[in-house]
Amino acid sequence: MAFDSLSDRLKGIIKSLKGQSRLTENNMDAMLKEIQMALLEADVNFKVVREFIASIKEKALGAKVLEELNPSQTVVKIVREELIALFGEDVSGFTYKSHPSVIMLVGLQGTGKTTTAGKIAKYMRADDKKNPLLVAADIYRPAAIDQLRTIANDNQLSFFTLGDKVKPEDIAIKALEKAKEEKYDAVIVDTAGRLHIDDQLMDELKEIKNRTHPDEILLLVDAMSGQDAVNTALAFYEKVGVTGVIMSKLDGDARGGAALSIRKLTGVPVKFIGTGEKIDDLEAFHPERMVDRILGMGDVVTLIEQAQKKIDEKEAKKTANRMMKGEFDLNDMLAQLKQLNKLGSLGGILKLIPGMPKISPEQQAIAEKEMKNMEIIINSMTPEERAHPDILRNSRKVRIAKGSGKTSADINRVIKKWEQSKEMMKMMKNYQKGGKIPPGGMF
Image 1 (cartoon, rainbow, N blue to C red):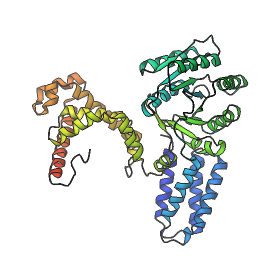
Image 2 (cartoon, one colour):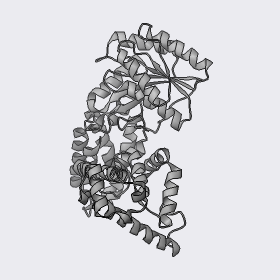
Image 3 (cartoon, rainbow, N blue to C red):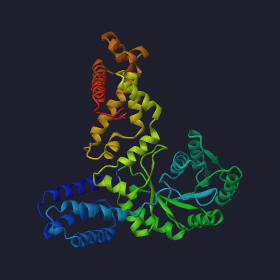
Image 4 (cartoon, one colour):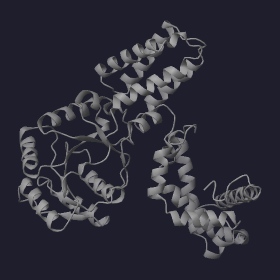
């Protein structure tokens, strides 16, 4: 995940700082050098880093941190505030001025623009309760039209195309006319990209802009491209007038420095981040939340929002009620596993919970494989076996092992997990009876 390296370095610096009984100019300079190196290694622009470090030092001295008996908290507070300022104020979300609003999605080829157009439409429908129209205006890559059509069909989204023989600006205008007639709230125009910025591309984008008067021109940049992302943002901003940035591939090995540099160097805010390849993997970008993640403070608000969006509330309540009644069976365990999978990777979930230890990619892979195996094994059981795990004797385990491609030992591990969970539910029920947990608490 992007920022992992920066996060590890900063948390290490903060930990060592907490071990200092007093802060002197010497160990403050050493700390600032460590922070500087961490930012540069994260691919943050060197001019941005220089200003950032100077600002921290100025504020730390102004706050007379050196005179404090426990200076670490003040320094962490200053670092946090400066990181938030570096990201810029929170301007996430779409601007809906017109009806329908026009959203132009622009960017270089290979950044995942067409997939992101689908993500935007899904986000608008789910989070903003809007009815969007996806428009295929990339006439140079016929596969882009087919790809956007497939995304729309798979997710019950509205789609518009005039093929690849019509000018992009004419496609955009016709789509806008259709949107007005059929009462769509927004038009999302998936424009063409290039391998590099050229005059033909910019002229085409300017023509679409001049004829459709978009509320938003969103630039998609690849977080993996480092400082090239900043240069791309500068060029598009100067030539087309970008209103916001979406950073893709922040779930990969990107160092994340581009996100920290773009706002400072271009004035263009990062509005959304792509956190995976699925249609739901688009998050509104909140600087404070991202900074808290980087500093290891978690992000409970985002976790709650994801749970509200992705977890079936009725199913969760049903399972919770059965648990409190002591009726927890393997069907309930399976339902829990499916709900947990909807929230994303295990490592990603743990990062949002304050104080949770970081797990390595290897540990995450092992844990997720175990969860997947549990699903396969439970699905290989009969309805009666899932409802009454106590009847699982050796002959049944052998049959389930053959059907699931696992071993009897694997079956035993699932049963042990169920027994442990059931025991925990009994304890919670007893606590609730004793008044230690309010009714409905814990869930």
